[in-house]
Image (cartoon, rainbow, N blue to C red; front, top):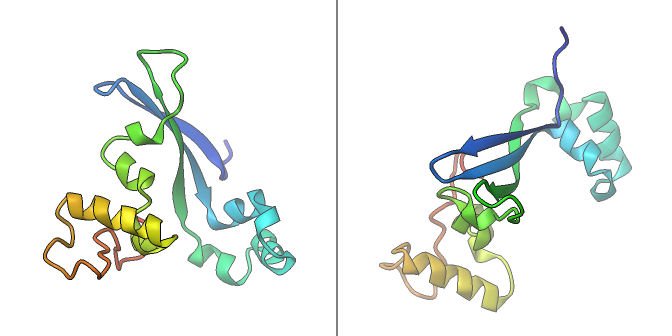
Amino acid sequence: MGKATPPLSFSYEEPRRRQCLHFILWDRPSFVLAHADHYDQSTLRKARSKHRAFQPDRNHFFLEFTGAENMAEANSPRDPDGLLWFGDLLHYDVLGRKALFGTPEEVQRKQAYLRSWGYGADEDPEAGTLPFQANHPGLLT
């Protein structure tokens, strides 16, 4: 029997929340090759040949969330806001350093959301807070 290779689509049912969550498992080369229109030819060649940044020892897997379905209602839309505990973090785009990026109005909205939950409340209101900036590769972001 052979080994499966990314990308791999799968779903996870969360019965208590009556949701079915949909994901795609990627690795670095498969993601780049599937999104070739966003990369230059040099990067695509390296991904195809698994050279430099795409060498097996530098490869890793990551999940893409593609949506959630309400299992109680068959035709309900896939809604990332309903995704377990981190749906709001995706909705407000505050993971990693993203809480400081965007138009001034977007950054203000993001920072107001974070402060509404107590993050950065003791800091200078003009300074941005990054509570979901993990300084460990692959953690949260």
